[in-house]
Image (tube, rainbow, N blue to C red; front, side, top):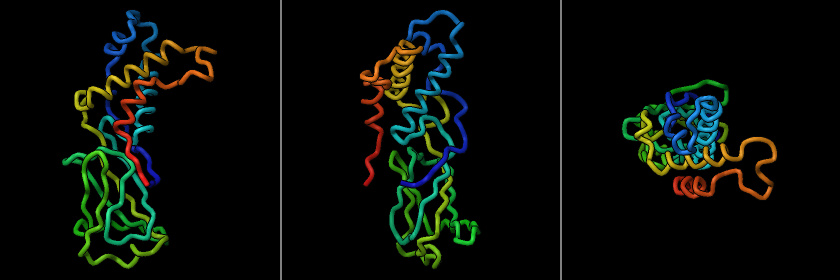
Length: 195
């Protein structure tokens, strides 16, 4: 799988504080900061486990060569039809050159990929092992928490509930899972299998 980094964060979380407090039956405001941290932690846990972006964020992936015509998987999905995508070639000498859009296309959806076009006249450098493609793209279900599928939002709520109930020293034994089984089951549906 490609090396990647999430270069922008979403502007909100898939669940709001009031939803979470309702779910965990917390009426007081004195733990709002702790609960907000637990929400962010649960979102990161699910996104990393399933290789997804719940809300739109920019991803910068580095794919290692050599390259020829074919499909090259991107590490984080989904990619929607209106996603911004740029592809550049990092040459062995450190030069970065934008790859002509006629040479590639994007496969959208939960398992996004870059297709190097079959009949294109590819630059010779693409066939070298030392060449890297840098793909910068937007991944996520949308900009708003309502764009995130309901089951993923529920997974966040469930994970927050587990960590909230078991916070503090020595609450979880080494035999108890630190991740909610319900969250794992839901996140597993979105996880891609790669070979």
